[in-house]
Image (cartoon, rainbow, N blue to C red; front, side, top):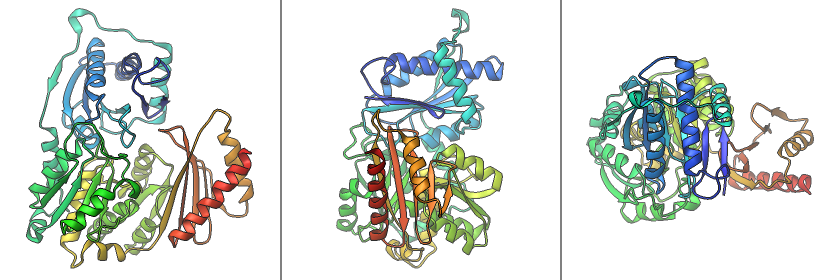
Length: 461
């Protein structure tokens, strides 16, 4: 059982011992720290925070604990109830709120939950802000409101519909063109809020929907991370239903993967590539993704005469570099689309709408569309961390072994080879080291990954 405290929030497994897991005490403590941070930094009365949650089983419990804690601090709460991460991000500025909290552990299994913290723009807090919240929590420097200045709760239950309308109003989304194509799409909502909002969006765009695992009961039918090995059911159903393609989202609907019409993975790395190709074809400009993302985005950006740059892993880092470079689209290779026209956050709804518009304007099926993009293959591996593993020593030794190659240490160690790359880094959200490799063939990517894993084993001893 685990509790991970980081600058991006608090994430842990439900139950167990206080301070070692995400217990009710820990949820209250970190909600108190966040509310106190807002009060200290904004120095204003009548603070307002938007809260939403995914459908995981612990959601209602954590939701009530966090809301009542904020009320106890004298902060008003806008309660969206069952929602998505991008919906909360959209709601914060629309409600003129001072911040937001999404209660979700994203792609983690059902025993996990988390508090993901937003600023008044609906964007994730900076590293400095996150560190300040951790310090407040450590010191338990909370001052609660008296009985006459307690906060209030206002429920708004239709924000996913409002979010859909915001997406459909984007200039590059053409619902009429999509309707004319009469697409049939299978949706795997992993029994969370994506099972509500993605079919609703598709139906508004005139798409026939086949629902798979779209009951938001929090009982995830498979590992919720949208990777090939977890998605055999939808791959088979796309073929059985003779569907145009399949859509998979994670529990909080900020990651998006497609299944091609032939039942094969489109590749979550290529979600951003395809959507960026469409956006850049209409509005040329710059792009950003993180260091663990495919080289294909760089190729597509340069095809459209734009500039590509990679950031450290983490949405806040991608957003910071997007703003610096005036990027018109960006995101992460895990299927996260960030389109500033609507907001600076990963948003599967935006990705779905733009991809459908792109597909409607092509005289290609999804498998054929995928074949038009540069062919890169990735291998994604991880090593579980134990107390005796010295991550810094591992990274330092691997860096020495490849000293003659192009190396970046912005985020862990990334080694750029002639036709491939490897990126090693400690996860911000799980007690693991991630090892990503990319090469022109799957065999080469797997072999590079195996080589690096063997070298790490040598270092560990």
